[in-house]
Length: 240
Image (cartoon, rainbow, N blue to C red):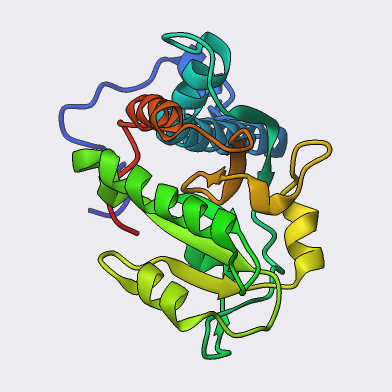
């Protein structure tokens, strides 16, 4: 009806004091840019920490095995000479098989490598070392599948047929040619000796880590291999 005042049914009329009071508003604070950036940085740091923890967990067995062998050295001193620090396989090492086909250096990783450096003509001393290399692998029993035999040939002369037949019998020796200078930049003989007098041990990550004495005793070399493979049992698996 004209002239009447509208009101909400049941609502009490405001008092004169309430009617005259100014209206008030509540303003909620907004996130500050600095606080948002700080939270993002904290999340980033937490993510990096988690990643580092994962890497540490994965690397722990490898680090523990090397600490055990190099520092604690269980059951006495190593027979061979430990190389400290280890020497990484050069990625630029120019390898070729006997057919002249290039072989990537990275393909050598994944196995323990009993390595010899011998000229292609392979004299009687070379033949004895090749025989010892074969016997050592067989002496490892159930662990032998973790070990490969490698012969690095630092020249381009043909192998004698009888030698080639011997290294191809059974589980064949991996025979690869490489420039002499490149091999010498990676592997080193004992002072006063030549590369062809030693057996070199390369670990599954491609690192030269042990050199046998001249005219090595196979049974003593085997003890070193036993210790190494046992120390690495948590991460070292058969086959490449």
